[in-house]
Length: 289
Image (cartoon, rainbow, N blue to C red; front, side):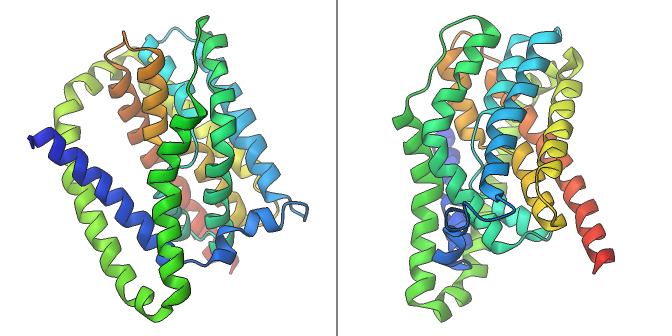
């Protein structure tokens, strides 16, 4: 096994551990919350669907279609906009004051819905770039199943049948996953940085920051009357699954070697911007309390 394979294995293991740790802290009631309250006000799932799979993709398509940006940057913008929630996002949402039922319910609901919605939304790529674009529902289901649903279900199951044991091991599983994540991401960032840096002066940074800020604003405005719910949807609207975005970009634009670098740059911008937003929201929630 070479270094690249070892890094990929460590990255995959870190995500599985972190999602498993999240499941250890949740319940099946949390995971199904949005489905159980589908027809109840404030209609959280409907608001999330409109924000994440309608308005944000439309804004991304508008930015990609109007502004003179390198093709890999345009691809990254739209690919992220149509991707589902990343598997470890609930940790961030909870840290910034999100309600557990809303956070875990949103992760599960959007992950399941994305198997159908993402392939449909990828058609936006074809409209923006005037070419045949697609991604199979099976490919999305496999990525979501392995990186989100399977480890989350495993954690939920342990928490259900052995809550005391789950509570004891959850912090350690999370710490190990975090260490593995950092250890695997550092060499990826170092190796990819020259390509990422080559995109910075092309308008990519401004376009990506603009999409992230507008996505946060869309999620915030559609988040409902509860400030905590607005923070959850604001972060979820801007932070999407990088694995799905990368699969969409590389599968439909294999001739563009800078697509992975553009995806990584967007991810970095989104992480920083949503962290700043989350801190500001947490302070507001603290003052309100």
